[in-house]
Amino acid sequence: MSKIGFIGLGIMGRPMAGHLKAAGHDITVVERKSLTAEDRANLAVAATAKAVAQACEIIITMVPDTPDVEAVLFGADGVAEGLSKGKLVIDMSSISPTATKTFAARINALGCDYLDAPVSGGEVGAKNAALTIMVGGPQAAFDRALPVLEKMGKNITLVGVENGAGQTCKVANQIIVALTIEAVAEALVFASKAGADPAKVRQALMGGLATSRILELHGERMIKRTFAPGFRIELHQKDLNLALQSGKELGVPLPNTASTQQIFAACAALGGKGWDHSGMVKALEAMAAHKVAPDA
Image 1 (cartoon, rainbow, N blue to C red):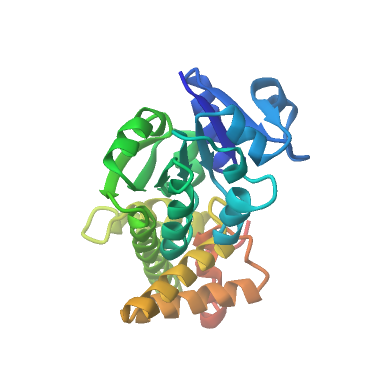
Image 2: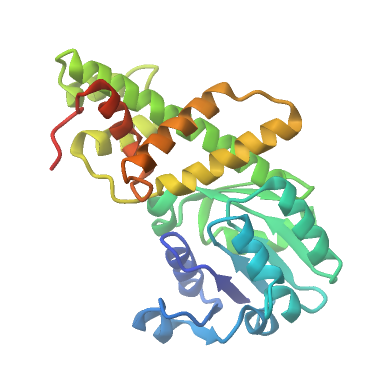
């Protein structure tokens, strides 16, 4: 079993760390006021990220955004200050592919390996240890990490042997997810305003070519009005910003990504940045002056 540092006990990070602990790994986290009594009973607690890195052979980060990863890794008393040759850093956050390459080079310069391994599957996937994990980095580092990743996910793919490949895959994932949520929301608003029962419409569509995991899960959320995250709109906005930035750098137009980002912006303007991303339907409902279903 490994000594693993886990930094970022959020909605997804806490169950992910819990699966590693249940598998017999020793887990060390950073001291935070947000730690629960259960956290303190089951996990070792270190004062700083530096101390976590000193105590562990594998360090996992699972934080919201690119600046957060940079601060955890390279800030005062950060992970980099506690690393010694041969350790492995795995960033499971969803951040900039370009910044990831820079972070990896800095960690490699310390004699350590680096993997970018963002995830998809949300809170449900994290709780069920069924996340999809998209990995970028050297084959040897991936082989070393795989037994650990398998405790948190089911579909684990080494997308490329260069760092940043995992993050690029995650950005692509977030484009597809956002645009599909928009399509489901638009279809249900249309059907409901036309007088059809949205629950029956969803049931019918689940048996045809339009079926998808998003229609199954998020379509149900839209009908039942359950918009507690999940995956917050503000985080999906962050991911689409990464997509649009990367598209600009590559000279790749992303017109539908841009328009979907504007719908997320409308949700935020309605006070919904903390809604689950299925709450995108509320902005479309506001534009149509019609709700798919009454609020609970």
